[in-house]
Image 1 (tube, rainbow, N blue to C red):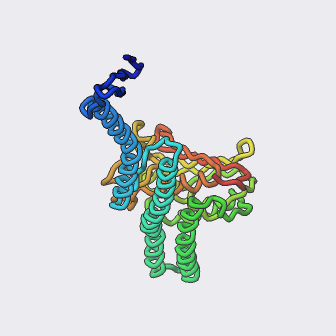
Image 2: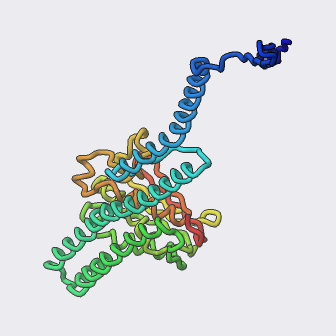
Length: 331
């Protein structure tokens, strides 16, 4: 008999010479390895592509983070990692960026402090030298000594003020605010600047119509107004005047300081408050400035939620400072 199965097997029963029967099963040959090679290569290629994709998604971002860390370590404080991933690698990148931002802020504040100290000590030391020279011929020696003593005290306060500005920028909540009468503060600053103006043959004219008391840090406010006034005196022509006006304005105090000098080119007005910016290198150097006075003034005003602007007054140059009456919540 003969029977064929579905799997290709053939079953036969044959009689033998001895009267017995033999069962013969015939099956197709087994599959050879060569027939699987195309499938094997296809699977291998798929696994390689998957591994490359996973590697690119993990190793490449890690390389970018490592490169950013290396650049930051070499002094490039602007080095950051651009990543919008939501996984652990994205968290690592964001943590690095936050750390880099904080370190950059601290180092920038430290460098700025050193720059500010060198700038701000220059003017009081010049006034001290002038006061000592005047003492030689002063008929009222007690008044001259009092002026020197006041300048020495001002130097001590100046160092503390610079530290205060940098600390306030790092932590605005640390500002030491108190009631500050703007009118009397302005009068003190004008009086202290009188010697410098007299040497340059410049008059200081004041119009103070303000009885408002603002909440703020008196030393920071003093530094802002003094720097603006000193800048006006420095560049006012000999024989001219510098005008200082103070008045109330809708719950705010407005201070205007104007000189009658050459002004600033219109295309440079937007940079006038940048650190170290000087309209004319030779002119500013001769006048003893390094381009930090107005920058420090701006920082002090902004810490009081105020506004400081500059414009050409044709003729001259005018700086406007606006301070809110209450500045208890500094920026």
